[in-house]
Image (tube, rainbow, N blue to C red; front, side, top):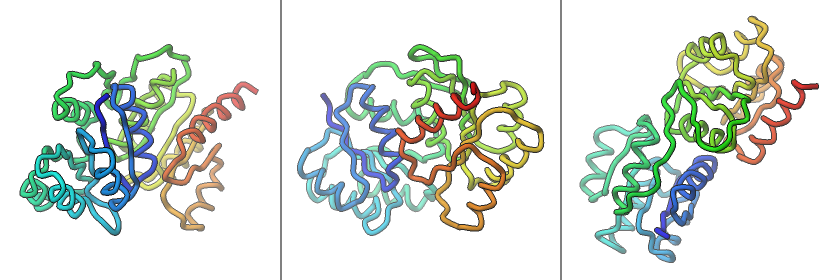
Length: 261
């Protein structure tokens, strides 16, 4: 199996990437810090390294420099969340094999990893922002994922689709409310901090219109006032980021069971 090393300080991203690429046939190892990633790179000698640009302590560019000192020809793909042209140029100067901005779709990332590893790889099931995946046996229960970060949204849709849910994804609150009216999802999974219409405003609008389904909030904020306001609007669950995927699945299952009751 082709070894793939993922270095990202967001544990949820690591878990989602591991789930996705393991199904693509890769032997996946991940690290949640640059130092840990560097140690693993030395130990496992991966065929491809997928590296987040923005990390505390040792950022992606610093880690790339260290990797180049060890192996000048190592295949390294940079994930540039919030990257500027300067960051991309710096990465290219350090001979990054590819540079992918996090706003791009998930299939572009998978194609890049497959191309760099020189493996055709099994075809992945892709989803557009407003369509669902069809891999695996569908349960008929639908989950709408609302997250402004395209890659996270796509990863969550892929993850839930592979577990039998009819999963859909949108990137903003206005599209979420429109999809609720059109598709009537059983569960809405929404990020609380988004530009424009924030997740808490989506929750408030769903309550105002009497949406009968389950609502699960995800947030990286620890602001007690904001969390208290969110809870006062009656979501079924509030999950702090990085979200544990097993806990997320359990929360969705509990919401669906409670609806039946």
